[in-house]
Image 1 (cartoon, rainbow, N blue to C red):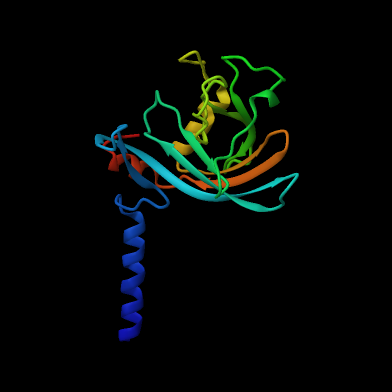
Image 2: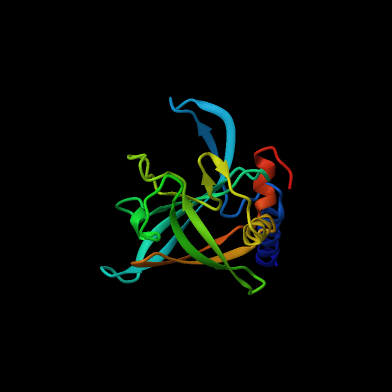
Length: 200
């Protein structure tokens, strides 16, 4: 009887923890620092996952994805991609054979949420090619040209809605030489957003 009571107590405690607004699932809260390493008082949300990639040189290798977003409607999420040895980056010349100030590293992706519908998006390396030394592995969901954001299309709006709903999203991306796949579970987004002082 005591054992049964203990099991029921532990089960109810676990359920309470998971349903609590303090439970963050895979989310982490990041304190944003300035260029001197001092806290700015701003925070952003973060999830880290592993994915798989294939290329002409390796098969079924692990790479690492970090997702960041402050949750604000007028801001755009970014993905940091790393092979474990170096940042994942593309050659600018791979995109239509041009090198121009407003041409970005573009990673073509498809994503599928819990509805089962597949949509297409691009991830953009936001640094123009002539600014050397700034290829830091960050890819953004929205493109900017000469410092101005380009108007988002419907697919971008839909993926932000899926993130806000706490959906699990599967990504399949490719460039001219590699295929990347990963999934991110955005569950408990509302709880994480409350932790940084914002509401959905």
